[in-house]
Image 1 (cartoon, helix red, strand yellow):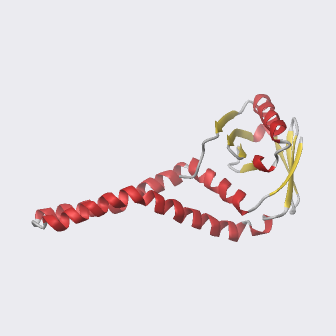
Image 2 (cartoon, rainbow, N blue to C red):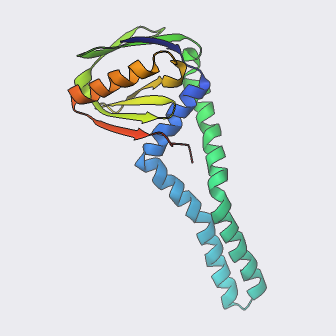
Image 3 (cartoon, rainbow, N blue to C red):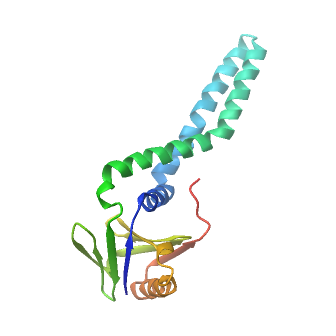
Length: 182
């Protein structure tokens, strides 16, 4: 099967956010960042309780609690801005240029403005389907993403080819149609 599409900034953004959401290092870092400020406020509140400044300590506890509640929204937006800058710096030459992928029995061939890449199907370790994309993870750690939403006439056929690919290569398939960056 051969498919052609054009990738835009939103496609790269969604792929980078998805890969980050699957990374243990990123999720651990985000969890630690969420806890740092509230813990600091709790330590300061405890110190203020010890010196009998209960009203100020209560304010510190409230600020720490509010930070814990609202920091995920702030970190989510901050991370999106970081990834957008990363895309502008590293993928600007690929934006808006046509790409094509040919999925065969033994190889996946990717053709873009730089040239051609040929990957053995046996190098695929996992296939993940989210609402608008397919992600093919490789044993090297890299990932091929296919924007399925840009292929309305070929989407069903692409899904069938992906299922065949999973069965023939014997790789793990994950379907997460509800995935959203959080």
